[in-house]
Length: 344
Image (tube, rainbow, N blue to C red; front, side, top):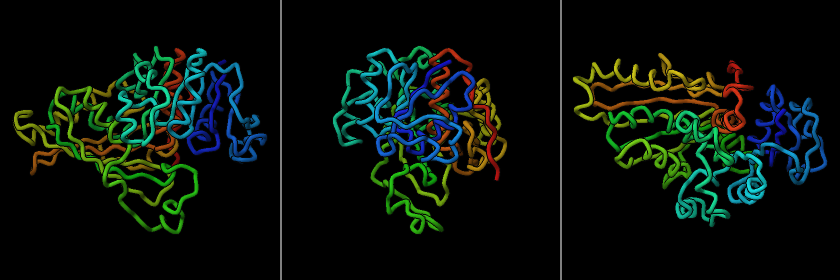
């Protein structure tokens, strides 16, 4: 049985990790931390987790086989680096080990990286693109929620070279993506019956998207990424647009069937990516680890449009972290993640 530890269980991602790991047949939650709630039972803080019989501690105790960190950036690396050096396999849900370039991390997150020497060792934990590397990793940087959906939506088209580098990603997120901390921006009265764009000068998830798409093509992508806050609790929906190359297909009408088949073939053996026949909806992913993708061609403009959606707390955070753990520990990738969506 794998002894798992969760650092900062009192946030949304940490609580979701506890929910998923509690039902995992090969994992045992050995320790959870959360300084603001240290000394209390997890079920006192989250009644829906009352069956998880652990007391929240200030620091992670010794003896865990795998550690998950749901701390904010910088603080997460500071906690995980000593564990990695002690031989504990670690999955970081913050942004600390997603980017390869420490200068880029400083530019987007406004702080110096506390362990830049570890960036070369970390693996970007998107199994659909880096499965083999994840399986051999000691440290995985779990992707952000927006990038998971956006990269998976665009990866087949970028790798096959059928689109130009000029890409637009229009993202919408539920409020839980902002975390559990109190903020006027996520106050019920501000969000309810409202819809707004934010981070117009550049969202922090943009460099992840350009980094990973750039690895799939010799042409550096030029990505415009605009995010929106939707009045819902969970869910990410990305609408991605890029012009098709003029010589990619004999005609735009022939392109649709060819691209659909291309996407299905690309994700044929992926347990958590489904290419759908109709545009997917966020409720179809509520509580499960799926990313749903629907490519379509605008024959009038010669533009590829790809819709993707996922649950930002599962495939966009905790579920993907457990998927990475399964690979790191040599377990079946789907173990503990077979839940269907909750509807309505």
